[in-house]
Image (cartoon, rainbow over all chains, first blue to last red; front, side, top):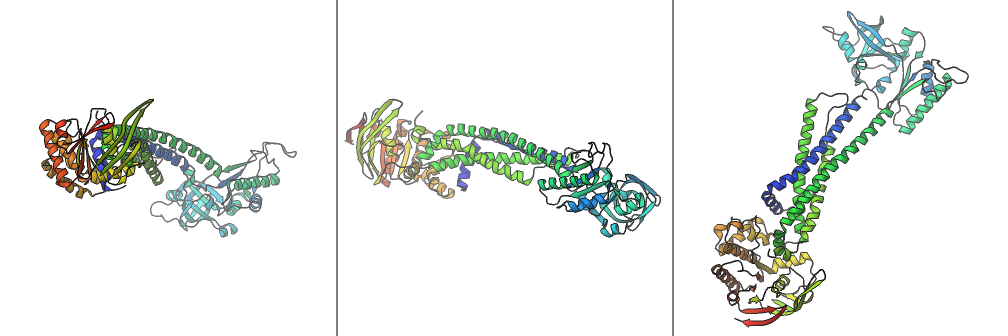
Length: 412
Length: 225
């Protein structure tokens, strides 16, 4: 089937009908080109939106205290719920399946200084696990640890932008230096990078929550409890959240149905919603793209049909000289596959090229970045092309095989 | 070589039945050169198609070189045509986008002979036809006589046992016709290839050993020339 001779036979027919072959191929190339552009743009859109989810584990849950909005057990609405260490321990003991858990305090934007350099940064007291929940990357030194918590050490892990702002000029080594947070000196133990897109996430300082409670509050107040749901399935994660809410509802006496007593942010929910949105978009794109390709294939099939009609006599001659029906089918189908395959490949290359050009020259925005057609798409498109070519060639080939030599060779 | 008994053929188009061959018996020995004559519509082309395994007969028996031709699938028929039969047509039936050499080599392509080898063999046959210098010309650059000589070379290249020629001189002038007949007679004599020529020209028929006249689907006369 793949003998060089067969290809030479096909080449000589194609060379004879350059314009026809070109026009046919163009339809297919255009179809594939459009599919690649559409899929690539879809990916760009998806990358853009997903970028906004960066900086924090995908299975993270954040529970913050709020104000009650439903009367419950004789208590009026508008009560402020206040979390304490007690709640952190309760949650930690009652839910099963989390892999990291941390309490947090919100100090807000705080004036921080090192020698003569000043800056306003978000100071975030937390447990060591928060480093995992936020998926930060330690660049130098270390993050908080359990000993810091137990001994209420005055230590701080600072973001790389904090470091850049406070440690300038000759004094560029930050580790082991003391920075003043609200006038209290803290030793810098590590420098980290946060992948979140918000500038505030980059300009953050983490200190042990126990230290902050002692130094800034003198109580065991906390503002937020955060954990990751580990390998839990979405259903198990839901169950964990319900359990946490029930536990808090009991200890603070608020209605478990109260939507505002506590505020739960569930990142996996958001991710799931966006994923299903993009699954929909992707399907839509494939439908349009395949529709375009089908139009191209029908074109190829049509042209091949005409070609077979034109070549009736030639095919009749071939059959009289000993061509089997299988060899005629092979000849026509291989020609169709060659045309679709080659043209499709050209479309593929042009499409990927254009995407590359866009990706390189267009600055990434919130909703569009890195449009790309990945390897899997290219492989998929290639397989699609060969199948499409075979399909386009099939009916004309069957027609050609059915040509009866006597009728083909009859005098006109 | 060819042995047919009581061959019938009916064409059915819609409700019309056309009984074209009404019981043909014919024996052609190896190396014989026979002409078939008859008015148009007498069934001579149909007979040639059946002999060429280009069409099926309805009844009767056909033995080609001892092989029974009956209920063949298309692939088998194609192989037999390729191996045993050579065709020469009135309108030459050369492939228009192939040059003379490639046209001659085409039957060998279907025998899976390598390109170089089959082109070399094709050149030999073209040389015998005196067309070596024309080997790279396309059919439409050649005269009728040249085209028919290429067609004859193509019919010969697979070394067939029988050559079937349908009005081989029908499109040629009388001088060229005689030249083509010279070639066919030579081949018949020197290579002992059986030859069956359909014609309506008496002087062409006279050059064969035997003339068979078909009238209305039956053999009515066999004349030795």
